[in-house]
Length: 293
Image (cartoon, rainbow, N blue to C red):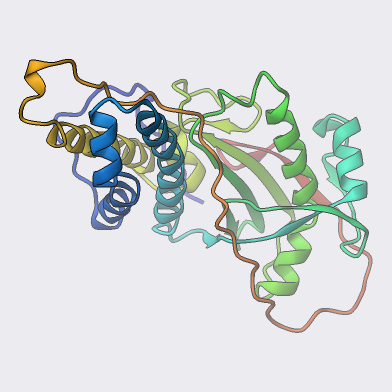
């Protein structure tokens, strides 16, 4: 898998934003979906409920845009297969092991897919490298600001770890005999501005490394900038002509993002293989250079 270094994570304003058609279409769709003229006019006029509603919708839509952009960029890679809409069972035994232990103490393990399922986890996308027989489970977040203080981030990581144990069996049974021996987990934090990889947390400027797509980091950042510019343009256009005679409402503050709920259960393919003892799978945080730890 080819790896490429990303650009700086600093979000300095760009003089012009030129997006490829597939990303430009995503930005346009997100803008149309969230910036409704009637509600925007009410917010510009100073209606506090409308301002709050617009701010909340903007945060949610920005998170969805980031997820869609990551998927679209990943699909431009020739080295990975991109799977979306997957449902991974979180086995009770795997959830218990992940909860009580640090990952390095059990990073190689064998589990039976037929064991009792505790719940399910829906990754935003899964990258599979047939040549390296490896996979990466990726969760995209607009911001992790609301996760760190409450312990929610650790819970998310543990769910991803538990789900990673069954991914190889799911790929083999339902995705045309895809065979993997190592599974990495990675969380994209759209608000992170440092390039260091901390416990599988990736900033936008390192998407080149994570997705194996040159320029992915700068393209993802440009998507967010273009979306915010669209908001600014429409906000100014909604100002009444007499607005200079009185106070103007400021654009709404951004609210914590929510994960997308639009998930699909994958269609089963092929014939289930005969039961046999599951092979040991290596699971860990995904690091640059394809390393799992």
